[in-house]
Structure formats: structure tokens, C-alpha cells
Image (cartoon, rainbow, N blue to C red; front, top):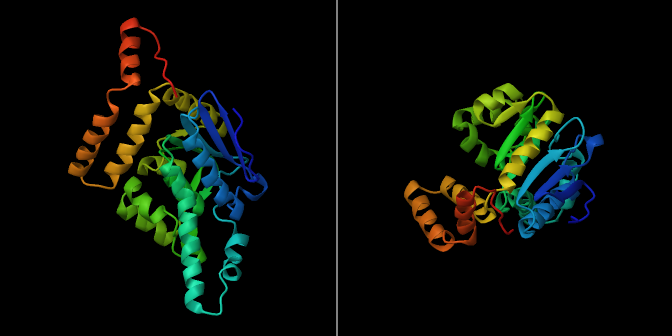
Length: 273
């Protein structure tokens, strides 16, 4: 199936796996204005395409992503210019909220998203990967909350999502210092699930993992993401109540029947999208 065309991304779909590749390798995949918008468009397309059961997010070239394009950052003042300071600041707030939403589209996407990270993953790129379901890294990966070195507060997701992955104390250390975290430390912190020796091994093994997920019940997989995300942001009792309501609606499905039949007949299950 053909995916939409983009100027800053390469998006493909095969074997039920959608692959979104940041494609500005000459700029270390720095996120310019077009890329922010295209990330949202790509994941909205994946969300709405039944044939896409799981997604992989990667970056072309040596580095996964160098964060926000500094030329875009430099142009913000002109973009929000208004004789009234209050209206200018309102425009900046709306711009920040829109950039937040571009990345949150990954979290909203009902399909699991696996990040495959090599080289630099700094600043806005860290905001990007914290929106993903899982993160996997090549041995050369480097992570940092870089905004402090630009004299600014990270504002598109890292400060909200990273503490839930690595804890409050380590998030503060990384945010206040801007120091680099290598792949080994990232794995120990729980930022990445696993390290691979090379980008090629990373790519192959993450695709194999995505293939495993794509073979599972699509309805149950979408439900897992919904319930896990809800439970992360609510109390245990709220989460239990939510999953009871979810399964009251979704448990008795064709996928359940097919799973039982496949086990009884000792064959792989065959699920509709």
C-alpha cells in the first residue's frame, strides 16, 4: 500500500509494519517546520490505516535526530511579531502548543510505535522518542536534554514524559546539566529497552520485533496501548475501572474466537485488520 508523500520523511508500509524515517541526513535530521507538521500527518495516517498494525520511527544517516532546527528557532521571533506584546506572547504559546501536539500524535496513534535510535538523539529528538511505546538504541547512541544549553526550558514533552521513564531525580540531573548519556547508561536508566551493536543490527532486530507485534490481535494491541497510556496518567483504581469498561466492550471479539481456534488447531492465528 502506498503511503503519502512527504518532503522531510520517508514513510513506507509493508507486512503490516509502517516505517517512518526522518529524512534530512545532511542536517542530522534536524526538525525544521515542515518535519514537525509531517510527523503529525504521518502518524495520523498510520492511526487511520487498518493495514498498519505497528510502526517504527527511525532516522536516516549517522544520527537519529539533532533536535529542533536552529534556523527554525531563530525565526520564531519574526513569526510571532505583533505590535501588542500580549498578542505576540499569545502567538508563541499557540506555536508551542502546536509543536507539542505534533509529537503527541505519536502517543495518540493507536498502533505501537518503536523508536530505533543511532547516533545523536538530543533536545527535541528526546521529546520525540519519549512519545514512543518503546525505544531501542545502537551502541553509538547519545542522548541529552539539550535545551538548557540554549538558555531555554524544554517545552514539548521531555519534562513531562521522561520522569515516568527514568525517575524524577535523574530527569532533573539531565535537564539541569544538559550532559550526554551514552547507550549503556540509557539502558540502565530504563530510557531504552535494549542496545544493539550496530545500526544495521538495530534496524533488523527492531523490525523483527515489530513483525512479532504485527502478528498479534490488532484489536487487543490497540487496547493495550489505550489502557497502558490511561493507567500511566491515572490512579490504580481508575485504571482498573477503565480496563473493565474497555473489556466489557471489546473482550468478546472475533480476535478472541480466532485465538482460541488457532490454539486448538495448533496453527498461527489469522486476524482481520
